[in-house]
Amino acid sequence: MMPQQPHATATGWRTSLGAAVPILAMLAALILVFVAGFSQRSAMPEAVEPLVFGYFAGRYPLFAFALVYGLAHLAREAAAPGPASGPRRILFGVVGAVLLLLAGLYPTFGGVILRAGFATGGMAFLTYQPLWLGYGLGAGVAVALFGGIVGLAVITANRSLRPRLKRLGAGALAFLALWLGAIVLGLAGPLGLGPWPRRALHPDEAGLAAVILVAAALPHAALTTLRRLRPVV
Image (cartoon, rainbow, N blue to C red):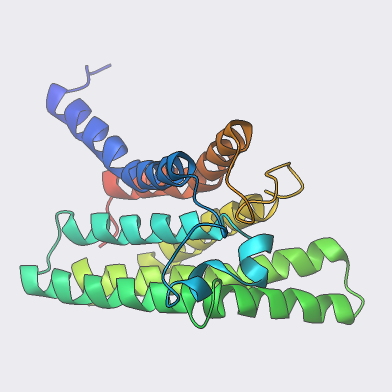
């Protein structure tokens, strides 16, 4: 068996660490929220209140960190080696980030992403589908919007614009990974996260939130690592 080359090993480590950047960004945001004691009771500008209040803020609070993950993933992919010029990376990276924030926070927390997922799950329930099926369908629709925005932004920011058949398979795997992550995030309440953001996070709740966030993000982060080791341009 041929020994592994040091350069290949170093490249693999850099790739793995790079794929972990979005997870670390989520955890950094969680630590900031915990240390600051941030909650809906915190003083904030009136213009910011719709972003942290509302039905979806209480029901799916960890979606806030999913947005952080999406923004960090987009920034990392836009800055990674690729065929795009600097201005193209900046332009489409910024446009993608703005679209993701609008879709996730306008007009209030959850945006069109969680509203579309909730409406889909609700319609499935009203047509007498099993609860688990409605939950899965709702999560799938939300992920399709979330992943579609991030994926399109990554392609336009730092990928070859020529159509590639391999992208369909890569996109399907990314969707499945994000779908699994969305299902895990949605279980935060039943798993015992507590009433945040109605009040500040307790230490045990912050620890549980960190475990849930890492578990939700790992499939997609692992997929990103594999894609970087075997690029699909």
